[in-house]
Image 1 (cartoon, rainbow, N blue to C red):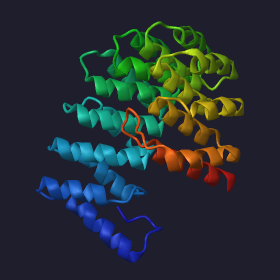
Image 2: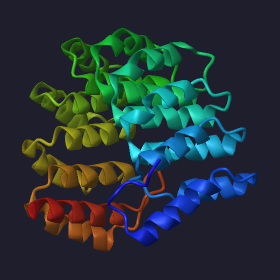
Image 3: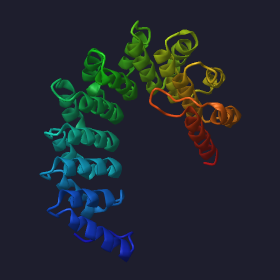
Image 4: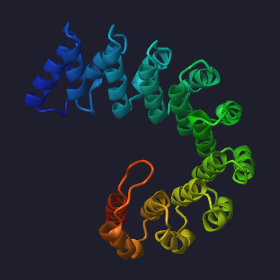
Length: 303
């Protein structure tokens, strides 16, 4: 297959060399070749990456699936669906992430089958739930609801987020009810789901959780949810939360302000960037989160 136009002769030679390296007998050489290929690969290189999903080495297959996450080309859908059943769950996990980004509805039923299979790795099923939410087809509703009933794990949390992203009206009442749950992780996951749902009806229960709940997990989730809603009515409350005693709650509030994108909060965020020395549960520097939020707001104002 001829090399696609859009590359210089030098780039074409380099990429063709990398594509040929995918046939090398050394696994390391094949992995490095996949990593070095540009994300905007043409048809000829895409075919080589898809072929690498069948490589004898699981490391090569994982690298190929990871490359397809960044490529995001629907022509890879069928190969990625097949990779969902890879014997190495890491490969299947990357395939699920790629399918979620590609958003090809042909992947919905295969993804549903993986989510239903409790023998599959928890992290794979987590990625599958997120992928179903990203694709956003109502056919996944019942399976996602069932997944929320599992014990405390990543799958149930991901299922709540996915229900919110589906936009199915049936999901709203479920999320609203679970936002009052006595278990903090359930409550927080449902609040984030309400944020993804993106309906103004979710604003009040989310803000109430942020104002009056003493549990840091719940309040951090509520702050994150307000960022997902992008409702400017939340700005004043989020600014108040910047003084919260918990670094993760503060970090989520900072992120939310960045998502909402109002330039008038830049002064407060600059102060956080200069003075907050704490890290979140995810080991993120609150000050660094503030700098990223400021950058996000400035970029948006220039659009």
